Length: 370
Image (cartoon, rainbow, N blue to C red; front, side, top):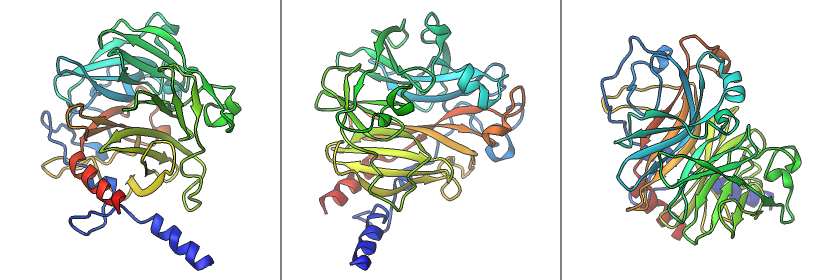
């Protein structure tokens, strides 16, 4: 019996298979080379040799470190066809380990192209706690308004606006109910502290869904503020072969009729991929999404590779017309976080990487059908 259980566990941990090619594929295999939005640059910009040369017009960065380090974010497209990133920033004079805790503020950037360059348009809510915000993400609500969420260093608030350019006003705090589960799945300190790593998904059934740091699914029947009911435990809990601690930065999306979650085990710099038919039950492990030391996803069309030291806070951009993921964005830093001391040559930025979501959804659906 133990041999059978062991075999079943091994099979569950096998990578995603391509039904067409018959070769093992994982989410990482669907990332595409980045088409530079400008020349690849080495001189006059920050960064160790592992991230040089690079396209400073990709995503969002302060290439000369005049002011900001950037983190977090999600891409939202407006009705005019422009692309917006709602993210966080702090003054580059702070070390990374201090800046994200003490100086992080919610901000907005805009571009005419999904890959960038994104232009910093300033703070989202400067009159609320001086703009304080982290784990910042944006989305469109069911009524068409734009919503931006902050957590980790704040309780878990939602700001809204009729326009992506603001002004954004505080709608309220997110509320939740344990629903018979551990309250610590929703927030720090056993449920008494702040929410963290909050990602909000607009489900096709009209409900709002939150995946926070624990990865436990939470659903709201009553709008974006909740109350959200915890609907299950950590999605990886039954997979004892996977690390059960030090997991963070989950992202959630819906494409090809399937719900997806990717989260990061930060000590090994490895991200894992799960799927579910309804986004609540039967989360199934689909293999490694990307692993820093083994998979190089930041490669350009000419073969140049940027090997960022830390790759965190992934979010998927799903095209509203096709329903497929076309790009991912990542928060990246060129050195170990303790090596960015402020007023130096190291920093963080947001990178946009194209993704073959059509092939990914096709292969995923064939796999699920089997």
